Amino acid sequence: MFAMIADWQQSGMSKKRYCEENGINEAKFYYWFSRSKENATSSGSFIAIDKGVRKGDVEVIYPNGVRIKVDTDLGLLSQLIRLY
Image 1 (tube, rainbow, N blue to C red):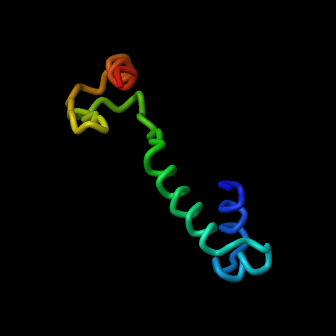
Image 2 (image 1 turned 60 degrees about the vertical axis):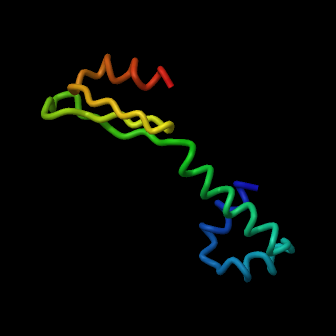
């Protein structure tokens, strides 16, 4: 179903038109569309950290609300991320 959402996004069509042309129940489409947004936000994402830049602290924020500020030591950051 996530592939269907990706297909719709690339189609440039409205949700309603996409559903009509593909014989998809609109309510079901909206259900999977909302699930795809949840999946995108909860799956986390990676950010690039430039190894050459060593300015300031980096703050790691866990989903349970715990915040840890550390120097930009990539080894330590990697360990902290794996803890969760």
